[in-house]
Length: 140
Image (tube, rainbow, N blue to C red; front, top):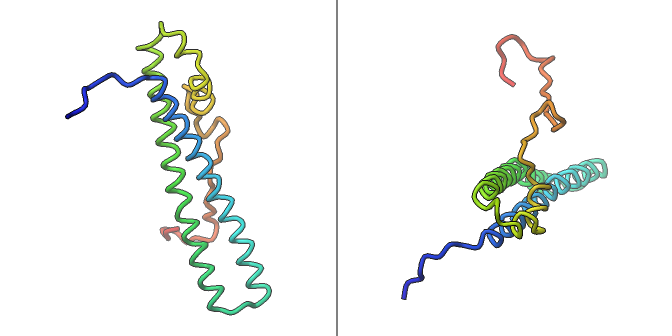
């Protein structure tokens, strides 16, 4: 027997989105931390002149961790954008629902994804690429 189409509880949807964002924020931070630790471990292995095979394999592990950083950041940013959009829709559609507007998940959602996105000029880290050693027209 098929389920009837019912309107999902907005508070429950909000809770799910907030928890997903929290998980993805932790995941992105974990990959960055893991990469830093692996870089230190790799340098230690090289300094101690460990087996070249072990070093090569550990470099592969490090490469996999480095590849996951942009992917996890992208997922995190997409989830935060979705949460931001969902909150703005709720603020329009459910403005009279005081229970929803003051619930713990709405407070947490506004902390995680403020309605105003920061730009690079407002304090987010921006990667700077050094191009000093490049010849004219050379790709970096």
